Length: 132
Image 1 (cartoon, rainbow, N blue to C red):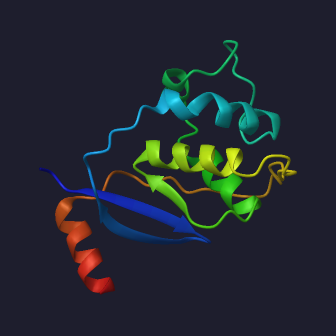
Image 2 (cartoon, rainbow, N blue to C red):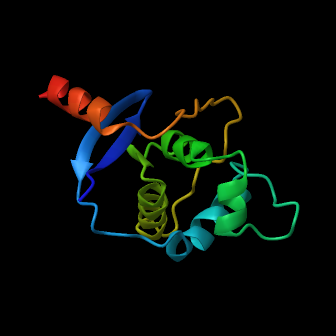
């Protein structure tokens, strides 16, 4: 089986660790609750075509930037940037685990630099071994 690596971000620093690749998550399971809050808090603009769908959002230029900003602004701890579905699941759990919380809207002064691609196995193995 091909190894799966999880990339976690916090305050501009990243960590890479190998994770179980057997769990396949369906983004639609977590998407609606999270995207509705991100739109309400202005991390994501209103969809020009009506309501955001997971498919339409994945084709947009936003990537995981809104989630990373949401985690940072609300001081939710490390954010799982890869695999993408894990980040959405993590956001869903944070939202449902904090009912009644007053979430911080997008402050408008955060920048997220998009990773340029998934790490290769060789790169990830070097990165992990250098952190041991």
